Image 1 (cartoon, one colour):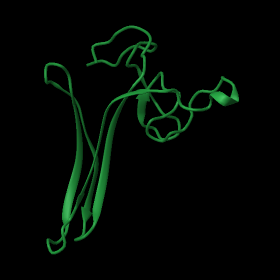
Image 2 (tube, rainbow, N blue to C red):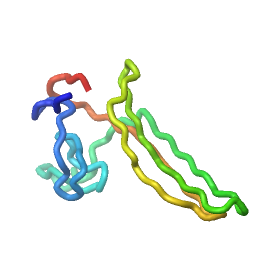
Image 3 (cartoon, rainbow, N blue to C red):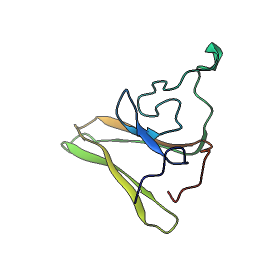
Image 4 (tube, helix red, strand yellow):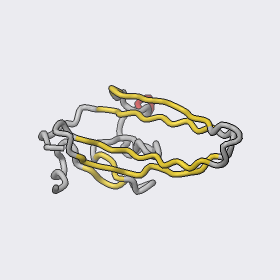
Length: 119
């Protein structure tokens, strides 16, 4: 699978602040929240409104008396045929009895301009 050409929908680049791979069209890095493009009036510094078609939040607690638990957070993206496009280990950790962790997943969508890609 080859990366999309520069200027096409789905083209990526590295954030100059955190080095995460982000969309070339991004004005604000979704990972570190740094502003990447300037040029509008000062009142235009807020992030452009994105559609969020999916947001899932949840938490779990390690019950007292069960010893330490370990966890791995894995994110998998599949296409319409069920083929795996990406799989990432997002984070790992351990919880002592009585500790709690909360997780949130959101998918933000913006108009992509340019040509349609297969991704």
